Image 1 (cartoon, rainbow, N blue to C red):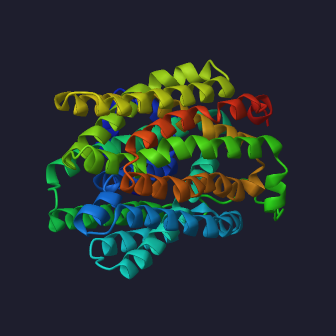
Image 2 (cartoon, helix red, strand yellow):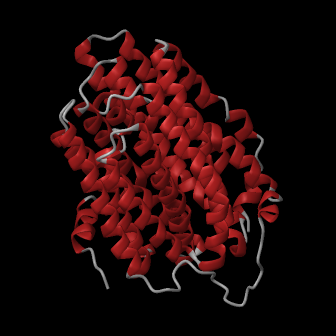
Length: 418
């Protein structure tokens, strides 16, 4: 059995060890394997468009289009992933996805033509489409229903701890315009996928399979679509992710490096601050979330994320010396919303759905990221190319408020009752 004592000591030092009580040994391996993988994510997650645009010499529009293309691949493959998870279990799908993503990430370090970029990006998207819903299903089926919110919160903390560590390393290693420094980061990122893969392979074969072995229901996406509150939540979440996570991940790094003309080293520091805030704030925020309804919690997310974009807009009128502190503050504010969003969404989703369509339902919710990604990346790239950066920031702020009326109409009481 693979053990991660150093990770446990680190969590204990941060005062987060009490979350371990809700994890059995198999769940711990999933969470800690993902945390190690997240270190690799932190090395490269803010650099995708920067790498293609400033190092490889492609236009910002093309870089954004590649992210959109990857999202379309995810949209196309996601329904099949959900069906395969329900049929074969989450573990084998996770293993397959991690293998594909490890190879593709290493290959991305050496792309030099548009054709190569698109081919490698296709396999990266295939790996991502398999990994996230498979991991969610495995975790859901490994813990008691009463512990799900805490486990998803803990998993998100561990993810951000890894991303924060990776972001700090990235800020120390990366050199503007230096191809080899970017290549090293992508190779290291690929190695963390291999480590997570070894954790997943070590899990028993039954992990991620149906809880009730006697349940032979096949299920279908029609059954998923009949859950009206799930579908309402799905539509509202698309907008939240589009103007929140997707635009922060795809557009903000390019905004900072191209529009503000700042060093790419800033990105690691900004995201490290975001991740540290996630780690330190998740436990106290979770207590607040547990005392409030999902509706109220998610409405607060929209308000908080809109406030973070207002701070980003201050960069246009602030002295140069204040821009980095403003961006760091914005990332911390955004993190507050993340600590509400991360345990709330997967908990209400998985408490609503029957087990035999758990894979399909989690795959459907993962489609939010693909749909948002189709729009967010090219929107940022083409608006920046057209000199509309100020309008882009304003659109992001208003966009975070747009789904709030939809959230207010969702009957969350039916989501939290099974």
